[in-house]
Image 1 (cartoon, rainbow, N blue to C red):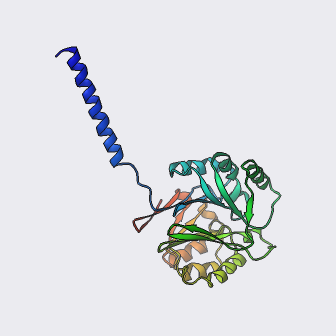
Image 2: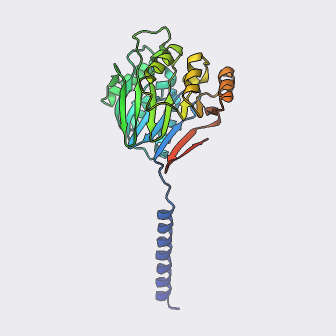
Image 3: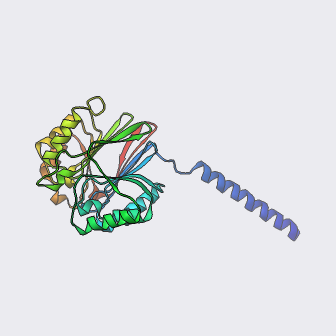
Length: 283
């Protein structure tokens, strides 16, 4: 075989290989689920990413050192912008990583409760918001984020003062198709009762919650919380903590008695998807 024929054969083989590889990549590219929630493993702090109905939402920003982990998860999910950041309250384990997020990804709207802090985390958050030319929308009333196929209802606190600032927590309820999920920040007894009263005005949409993030990292086990979980028919619960010894054993016993499957983030990130109507919760 002449050198010219050899070159033609090699080129033809390379072209065929490229066609085959391209076809393989086209056929086997990863699919994006219709609905996705990721609860990150960020020690005893909260960072929850929601992609649903054309919206990308981040609920809380974990400890300061976990900003990079939020950005990594967003990148892994193919998210290049955030439509909303929902700040449940201003504790450092909920806002610490947000400056890193705000420096690296466009954000449209930031929702927050109606109070202020004097902490370094709060100051850094405000500086990052100023650099991003954003201001917090402090909720005087409940807020609804419309999704294609559902909505996110953000329930705000009623009082202007609480002895425990955890009770300023915004509570977010997601309704998507037949699925509902609940994220309670660090809400304590008083705030949970406020939410239960608000819930009574929306019985058609929120009779049941499939999935709920336990308030205050699973460290409480009070009557209103148990009633909410039982009456809400919760099937899956996530506890955002890295130390099982610091989680309420009473809460874990209650969840077991109600046959609610628990996903603690000390075992890793919790990943919920809905695709073609099929719900999956993985860890």
